[in-house]
Image 1 (cartoon, helix red, strand yellow):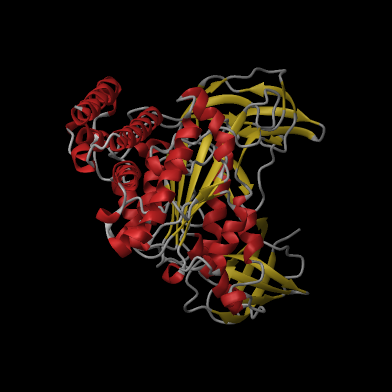
Image 2 (tube, one colour):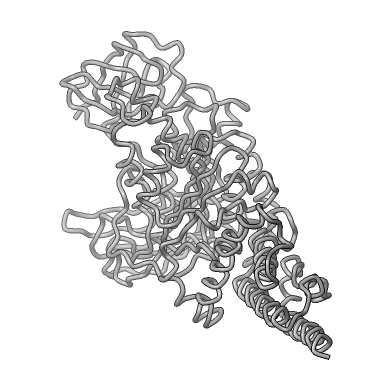
Length: 591
């Protein structure tokens, strides 16, 4: 079909209407006005198309042309994604900065991937091999950490009729050809994929492998599985962004896709400043060497927020199809929902609760349900995963508002950030009585096989201790702690140690920012053993003040800041020292 050219008949902020668009399809990308602004068709009524424009529409006039590309909004996939930073519709911001300076000019265009750069391609398949979607035909060293696997597109299946020799190629050079039922298909390192269409998989697995984040309150109390979904709701100042930064820095996913969706620009600046200098704890390379950043900050066009989350999840699925474990952080889905609400209002749609569109829940579900640990297409049946963690910013910290409630219906982990904890400088400010994880039973087998056989029992004991403390606090508020029996005072002291020295963790401390799984397990085991020894001692009439003043108690309280390699050597001696000191108190009391 020849190109479709219409003209603008109505403008309402980021939403315009154009007539003479018969033959266009929903979600086709269009070029709007004399400056060729990028837009997407979101409604069709006979030959009138309603279009959301991903750029500033100031100055547009009725009568200007609208040209349909007859293609859906798609992303470019190939070597060069890692270490790059894009806007919501995958325009590379460093390249645009060279063209237009610090501010994005309207209508500016730049290829998402560098067409001139040459990559060293090593073939791993040979002519005559039968291949299908997601089979690997070659490799490119994309960064010092990431080996980019050149895969067959999901919709291609046949026999390799040719494979390029090892050497340097651009992403647009032909590197292989596949003979299919429909003819010969040439393959390049560059692929394109529609952002609103999930990439296909062979099978979804049940979540059973833990995603280790290095954050004790998450890994031990409210764990997330690889391929899982989690929400981080919290009011202003409760630490959502720092929490997402921590997950991006330290989670044991091999690829990080960080989507800044409608948040302040200084938060993305922190990521850009920190990631190139922070060291990956596993590879000891800069964290940026395994990260893709997508920035659609609050001062960028509102309509592009809708595209930014889909751009991020499509890039994540692409690396998943290579067999990698990918983690996607979205900050925040509330700003995305607000963009939906604004565009819905411009479309004059019937509003739902609090003005959000009626399809809010289904849009959130479409996004989160693209997560999962899966068996990939392809003859070797590899597996990969995409884990999705989204921040929610409810106005006033009200978790009953529509975005938070609809998100909770979909995700399996709820990390509730508490303003009261944040005011007390307790970070991460995850409220242990309101949060939950539905992956607890699934990942417990992994923890008990790889870290400690009684991991779940210890975790449940610690939670029971914290819940008991919450009950006792009501009494303490009335009569004070000194009026409690010694056993209850011992419980309060044990819970205080778990709360202050285990759940509390500094994101800015050189050591405490990341806590390995084995160290988490041993710290909790020692703290619960100390709790048992307290109860034993108070049962023998030892005064609680004598117990909490022992030297090993102070040492145990500081174990989070002990370098991880030293802790391995010290925890056994610490355990023995603690037993000796408390046994000495008991013997002295008995005498």
